[in-house]
Length: 439
Image (cartoon, rainbow, N blue to C red):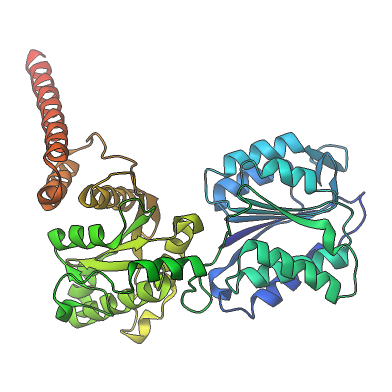
């Protein structure tokens, strides 16, 4: 979880203990199981444009504003002669609409008279916290520190707000009932972290597992299993994914590729490479326990089905990538460092398992082309092919691997795309040759 802590306290406004608020949050979060999964990015003496810059740079999952508020907006620093600037409700709502297209899930307006602003922002953000009345330093510090501590114990945003308000009363202060949560869907329980130690299954997940049965899809040879994650070929993987989900179930598929495993095998030996795969499988199992199923596709790729799309699968996938990156690999071999690249494909109604997997594979290929050790969104449909000869061969390989699992219509569509693409390349090559000969 990345939290953007936006602090503004212009000189000609009442002094606030914003540094103490940040310190109190850090102390309480440091005592939670998820302390290593939280990154706080502070924007001190923030000006209006700093918000837009920070959202683009950091793509936070939570934005926390600490400072003064008024019924018409929030007060921020100013570059001009005036000491401060009021950023209007309309401007902030438009900014949050932009941020909603990134990772932003929660906004905390820890300032006075911010409830109306919270209601406006909630049109774009799933969960927003605001105050109906004035908020003092004591209330602000007690609420925010307990709120983030609760989130890092894996509770829902609603319960974290309740714990923050209760903390105000425990400090002997008033105003606990003035802080309110505004959410897009009152019946939806939003979590930032889905686990506290390894993973926590909520009652609805347990009920779903019970109704469907507790057995994982049993495909492949158990002897080829690593940390409970079976090793499958392409045909078995597609069958595994097909059996893992109900026809109408909303799921996300995470395709994870260990970066540079061939180089690890070459430099450190295959025994070390096998240990890397074992530890990665263990991290996957601990991260997604009770929340999904996973298998290993041939060498260094893992296919994970996340059954909780309402809890933002990208956050859980980012947590997994971070755990792989921060794992103490030197305990396996000195100087060993391992990262992974992943892609998320959301299931579309009626989509075949092979097509779903193929979209996620394409997402990983695109991610590795730009930057390894990252999370990428898979294309929402099998794309029209484009690019150079290397990409052409890559798509041929993907098609040859997965075509046996596609329907005749899907195979025809892919084959038509390939044929059209290759014909365009051949025409372009012939045109280039003719132009060269002409001159």
